[in-house]
Image (cartoon, rainbow, N blue to C red; front, side, top):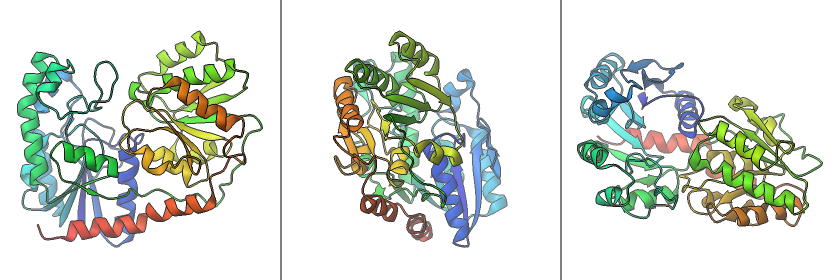
Length: 390
């Protein structure tokens, strides 16, 4: 089978990029010929085809509604590669719904693993930081999530996005939580557990002598690293000497470094910057727990899953896909999204060995997660969807 993978960009820093790399490898191992198409707005280091995209905001105002140049490039890629099936993950930012026209005669499966196809802000967060509970439309204007001008601009865009979704032969998503969120938005999707890499043969846990917490991910507002820093400040003020290592980069880094200073946490917090994915195991090995303090309802939380299968407990926010993999007292602890005091209490439980005294989830729990998120199983299910009649 010839499979064309389509995505807005492959920045090699997020969950969707990691996922597509695994899917491509799984399909190739199954004997399929795989090609990757990305927009030209991203680095696209491993792309076989590039479709026009731009990061210029003035151009995006129109091209996000319909990008005819991207559609033309996709048409050329389809004519050259002649795919039997297409698997699309992310098209709303650069490629636009216009790319679905040249795919209409090819079996197309759409993967929706974030909110952008159903939420103009992409985060399902209200201006006051609360999680949005309503369907996009007039409430986006009423709640001041969008300006009147942008709200008007988004009407034709989201009508076309809706039509693109409906044109797909099948829609899949990454968690049961996201399946319910999409259903609330009127999108029927199947749940397909994402695959993860198993622990490397040389990986072994080596917990630090003193409590060490780890965050890995993009430093953006919805990831809640500010909540984590404030919780760490409370923990240390209560007399527990704990440290935090922050692995990742992003637009919030400067603000978070400033906050670290204002909380007088410079000696306890280390900003490590972005680390190649292959080196994440080295970061997990000494951690007493990985912390996923997202303030939004995280669609999945791939970093948390990667920690659990390596035996590392996870402290995570309770609303969203994270709660599907974090079982309190078994694989980690949960706290209310954005609640600094509750997170500080969870960190204290871990630091004082009230839970996970050996800094390890049970081997059975780690093994069960590996089975559910096995790459071979995922590949078989993806291939079944891609082979289904158009």
